[in-house]
Image (cartoon, rainbow, N blue to C red):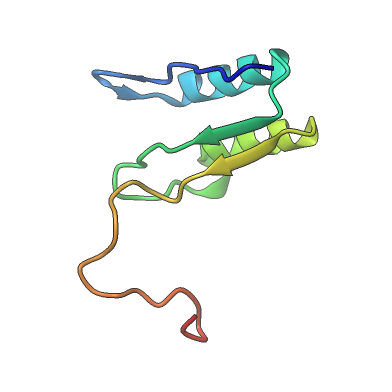
Length: 87
């Protein structure tokens, strides 16, 4: 399949319904990989309310690889510890 793009954000924001609809449409179109990078507005929703986590679960269950960013705000002004071991 050729690369495909699905619109999920508008001037007023990115809505869960559009994110889930695009992921469903991509799966129906037969994509092998879904890659997306969407800012969560400075907070991470709980797992069971996270549309990207929910859509990813369904995509992965259909054999689709999903790559999703953990945010778009760039590096913090001070280094962050990534694990309790410091690496």
